[in-house]
Image 1 (tube, rainbow over the protein chains, first blue to last red):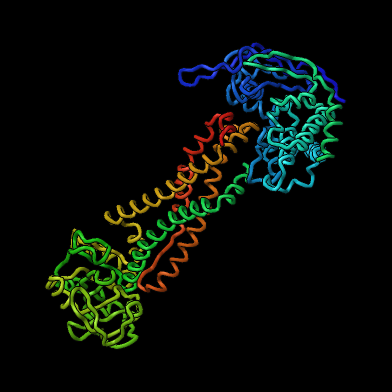
Image 2 (image 1 turned 90 degrees about the vertical axis):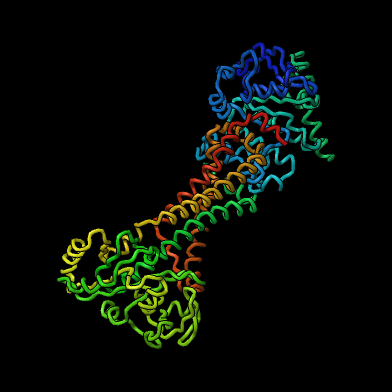
Length: 251
Length: 366
């Protein structure tokens, strides 16, 4: 088990306002939170509560209207587009609801593209890490298949491998089980847990599904652009694992 | 650059790829074949004119070296005067005329005796020299192209002629008729379009040229050994304008097709661009990715276009023996550069547009 060491992420009074014509919509109205290195956090809340905006800002894909985001000591809100892109390349891994694999490429090629972009292609230590990952994610024999030849769960596991192969500071997962059946959902969530436990990967899950919360160390509840709750998960992930294993066997 | 993405995208959209490659190939073909046709005609004419065997060609003031394309003439009596010049062995007057009936062919009105002297003999493959004003001699390529033989009638310059002889090609024109008959047909009685001159020896050529220039100021005196290079480097204003238009149209075709195909494919690939951006791909990475893809299309199109042009260059003379398509290495490079430039330029705006997309919006694109 990898121990949590220090505060990896800190947001202070984060605000995000969208302008749609004359209308102003406040997606985030002052979000302050911290995430420690090695922590697995679930950000939960109903649709429209601002969790996707928060994820995009945490992932340096979007600038907030106000407030600051410190990740590994770097304030991403002060960065220009080029710096944020470079930061994203080094520090952030994304996993999306729709998997977002490049449809024309095989699983292996999808990961190679990511490695070319982050500059790790040819790095022997990353090669070793990739082998560990594909074994851990049980996709070793799927690597030469294109996304259409993979099940949803397999696609998501390839997407996870692609996201974490560069060893990002934070793995951001946006509704990662939203397009999966329950068996595959459990499988993917267990994979997240394993990544967190064995590799110490900091993971932030963004979801509206309360069942996912049990897999996280901590649950941050959001509503109307504000954090309305922040505390440990009510169920241990081991409990969820047992349940998911039973369910997987039943399926 | 990521070759895997580029190639997989091209393979995934075979119709778009094929259309783009064909458009660039057509651009290259248009340039190479049309320019090759013009250069082929120029070279063929120049080589045949050099093949007459004369050392010097005298033309009236204002005449162009493109034989048959200017109406300027000079008195035929000049021929006798030239024969009297020191260093001159033979001289023969010629009336040149372009036949545009059915095909584009140069016709020489010649004096058989003096033309034979200057050309050191014409090789007859069949028949004999013309003996009547309505008889004509054709070269083997013309006879082959038209499928005609001795005794056949042909329509030329709005007159009917009987073929009296077929000669080996390479001695000036493709058709030869009587000088006086040609003068009557063109209305240039007692005139000549040019005079071919043979010097007494190769060493005498510069002196003869100097004497001609001194005796006939303003006249055009051309040393025949320089004729081919002069012909290829000289330009005809209308022809140059035509060629510029052809190159412009060709480049526009390539540019517009690549622009359109890149623009539409970028719309289809919005989410893909969002994915790449989320992984940390910079805007310049996206621009380079799309430009590289356009470059692959362009290079493929250049290869296809070049092969097709070479095939056309070989096939056309097979079906039309009097036409030569000369594809020169210089123009191959030019056509390739035009094609690559137009493809890159066509893909530039779509690539910039793709790179400027917000990654969040791009990822949300359905």
